Image (cartoon, rainbow, N blue to C red; front, side, top):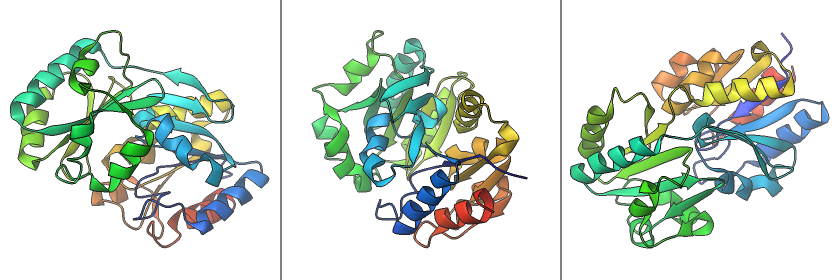
Length: 273
């Protein structure tokens, strides 16, 4: 089968363990673009965190951001499609989380991310220390992210809680299960919330429809729990060599890890074959 679109997760996939894009990935993306193929990013990150890498990946126009909730056109800096969480759920989730223990809050609204400076300094404590520099580079710092997130006029496509304690995260998740939203565990002790029915698989299907490509002609590449839907729904699901067992099980094939040219292998072996 000829594939036309490949969707690449970022963390653990397109980015190596030091959060860099490997030269082999850049070269493979350029070859795919020259062949008329579409290479898209499909990440839990918001647009401001994705476009940080735009200059390294000039062959990538579209980004499926916020775990499938948003399609962003990086060439024209515009949101093509977006689905937001219910403000009532956000307020309830914050009530529950604040009862369970300390957590670092990421508020994703529009194309940006809003955070508290005192919470960002606790990133390592909350298992996301590797992102602290990125937070400082891309976040809009506000005095009270919790109050900001509770405002009904602040539309949010995704919400992340990074707990200091895994048990606190698990208690919070157990209390919020059944609410209808999509809840996904990530990092060491974090969880991610998306609107009902939204996941990376849905985001990839929407991009394919936008480009007039059947879903069967898409490839997805990922490594973690929030990649499962797109690994299962794409025409071909590719797990990275560093992928969690659940991602390997959901995928059709596996390539090398994110430090050893796995993305380039996926593009060369399956998109350009």
